[in-house]
Image 1 (tube, rainbow, N blue to C red):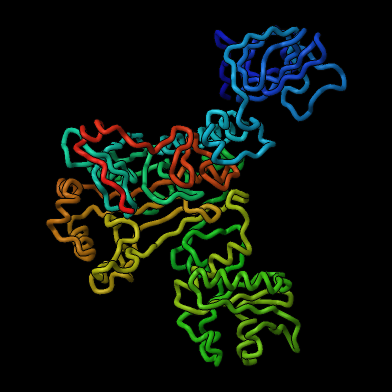
Image 2: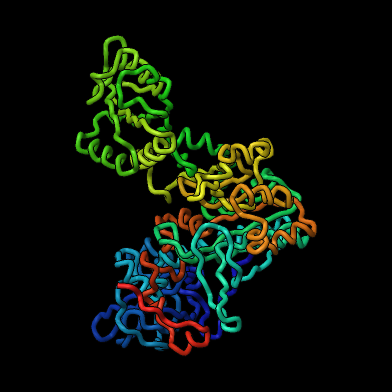
Length: 585
């Protein structure tokens, strides 16, 4: 068993939250921030002192000139609290420090908000005064949980023979789809570095260099619009290994992630289940399914193949059943219909399952247009019983899946951060998604993903049907990360470039360093990256990753604490060979 760390320093003997009955009679010295001061006349004062471990009550003879958030050192003797005054809600509630002397180490202005989890403060204000916000128990717990999870991930990778290697933050542009942050070069004017969206190419080069098994807690940057689960800066567990296939990578990452989950929650989740991309879309309408509840999509295309209801004459018809949802109000159903239209559907058909002659019947605006066979088929396919609500969408396959997948989460889901914690691997993604303006396929992940070996013969003739050897990890409906088996053969890489419309000269110009590594003997390799911000947020019970990042940006991308982003001085621009161009009105 690991012993507790020695927290004694030249300034303190104990941390505030660690003083207990075992210390009664001892003279101690604690340091921290004044949480509260209460005076009882002129002869006695109580000071609640706080550090990251908790609060302790200090009893000072006479008066004491301190205010909220003053930083002080308190020396005194630990004693049991008088009978009837113990505080069961406080870890140190059975004791207090008496006969105290107080040394003010730093004075403080009144805090802009209460440093207390019982009081909500405006998020912008909290980020503006993040140095105060970080003192709150919630933020302390979140950041320390993050450290625990990082340590578990590192331990899990090292136990499996992975070596931590740091990759550059100043890099060349990469074809990963997102907008990059650009850093102008002072020494080579007119040229720029970019900040890495991920260490993707660097870690592939490490495999060519014989590192065999690499990992890194990597800082990555993408200039994308911010939201609850996205920041400009993010951190990921980045992994790559040589002489491995998909199954090996899934096993490596599962081991580390389940280690982290066990450290965070105290319970090790079961083995991570697996779905193909096609199965996830068919059953849940999304490639990041929330498996904590049912309400799976049911294919009704054949059920309505012979229907005379024009609303169901579409390439794809699917439905979901809301168990016990038959009492949903008409106004709520209208809201769901509007939401379905906003998501791209032409409409939303809804039916209340009701008792009928010889079985379950249907009630709703379209029910009277259904034939007896339609009703029997719909009830049979969905398994609806009296009291349920059935929602149906008819349209193109992707639209139907997207709409019902979203409505499924709206109706049946709970916040992503609430347990139970249901991981899922999604495998066999399409290699390409859609086409660009020139008619060329667009890589679904990046152009270095190995095609599925069974689909290689269709690469040129039917590229959109080709599966990739790529895989995502999902937790409670949030995508935690993506990975793939990489292309290590120059001939396959050239075929992929050709399908994407990238000619030999362009390929050499953009990726010559990687292709050169291939030509000098690259081993088969594969990898993955886990988004640590999202993983920590879920286990911390937070709906926004801003709550598990020490110094996040606001939704607008600004930092109200430092004022970033800020204009730079003209001389700095001149050193870089740049000048400010007026923004068009």
